[in-house]
Length: 228
Ligand SMILES: *Cc1c(COP(=O)(O)O)cnc(C)c1O
Image (cartoon, rainbow, N blue to C red; front, side, top):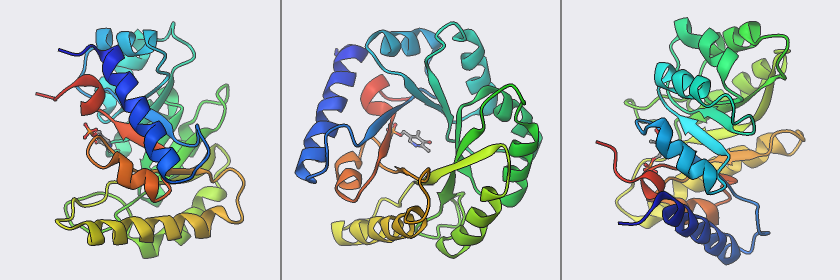
C-alpha cells in the first residue's frame, strides 16, 4: 500500500504534467487536500509531507480538526461543503476560506460574524454549472448579482468561483460545462485583481479541469484513499 506522502507526490506530479500539457506556467495550480472523514493523524502525515491547504466538508468535523491542529499555524483551512445559516459563525471564526457560498444570506452572515482580529475571509461563489437540482450552488445566471453583493461586504474578499461539474458520459459535454465555467470566471476576473481562483477538478477529473483553466484542484481520494 502507498503512503500518504507517496500519494501526495503522485498527485503533485499529475498536476505538474497537466499544467505543462496546458502550456500554463508551473505552480499555477494549487492543491487543496480534501481531508473530510479522515482523522487528524492523517492530516498530520500530509502536513509532514509539505501539504498546507486542507479542505473540509462538514462544519462540526472541520472545526474540531482546525482546533486540534491550531499549533500548525501555517495550515490554510477551506470550507467546501454546504453551509446552514445557523452554522455561519463557527465557519467565520475558524476557516481562512469558504468556497461554498451560494446565497446572499450566507454571505452577509459570514461577513457580520467574521471576528475583527482576523483578516477578511476569502470566499468563492459555488456555481451549479450543470443546473442539477440535487446540487448546491447558484445557477450561472445568478453569479453576477451575488458577485456585486459580496463585493460590498466589508469582511469578505471575493476570490473566485467553485464548481463540481456533472460527470458527463462523454468528453465533449464535460468540456462544454468546463468551458462555460471558464467563461464566467474570465468575465468576473477581468476587472478584479483578487478574483484569481477557479476551484474545479477532483481526483477523477483533475487533468481535464487543469486543461480548462482550473487554478485549484480539490483532491481527496487520490491522497487519503477511499472514504468509508
Ligand atoms: C469530497 C469532495 C472533493 C474530493 O473528492 P475526491 O473525489 O475524493 O477527490 C472535492 N470537492 C468537494 C466539494 C467534495 O465534497
